[in-house]
Image (cartoon, rainbow, N blue to C red; front, side):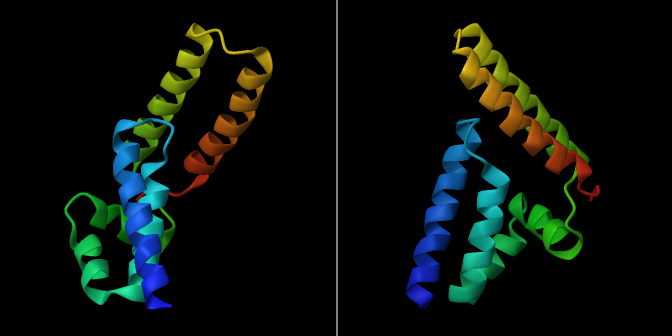
Length: 117
């Protein structure tokens, strides 16, 4: 079972790195998932992720308090707005825009109702 958790951890981490460049791929939830998977498969990889200068603090904030840093909230909000504006500029069909409003709105509500780290 450890091999499965390890594979899922690497898959999540790799997808999170892709999410750094692609705005539709959620980086932070995938980093949190990688930490969860590594905690069940590799103490060394889990410790590396927790001690990482960029990812470690956000993992710790979420694990201990369910909190998101205000800067991360602002960046997430900005990227969501950019994604929606790109859809508008590219003349996405109205039903696609409606789905985006609902889904992205729900994501924003979730993000902004979490406590600040």
